Length: 194
Image (cartoon, rainbow, N blue to C red; front, side, top):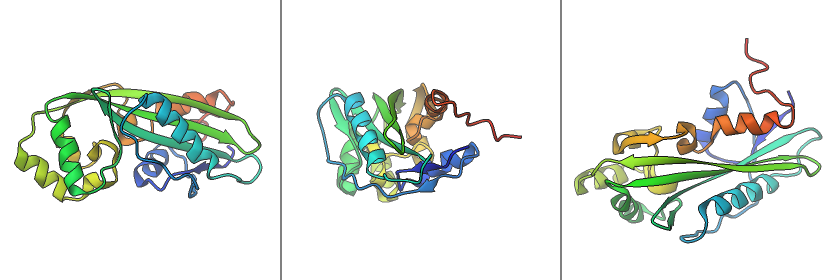
């Protein structure tokens, strides 16, 4: 398999790839993600994912760069990473007892110009949270580097009543979608299993 590069400092994304047998080289992207609160979440997430992947180029010949961007949205409002603990509390209070959606834009860029861009969306319902629960969770620091101010793969799982759709998308990298996109270039993530 060709060398895969991950244009993300996210430990969660790296861990998801390692979980399915991929050991990517992690690269820093030059793309500085602006804060947004309005707009089409799918379009924004796909644009940012592509810019993140392109911002990690160039890579050696044959290399493939993966970029991803996750946005949480509710009632037309977009939630990226909180600015601080107070902002995390505000976001969590908005999501409490409600159904929100998590969109991850996914971009795969080949050295030399080819690219594929798509997105995945998952519905997440939070249970009704008390003020004390919100403040305790925000104080852990876990929400501070996560879109929507929670990590479903960590302590934030206790906030979630149910999800409809792709779990790994909520974590930050929709693996089934990634497998499908790489398959369009003749790459099989399962080829080196067994």
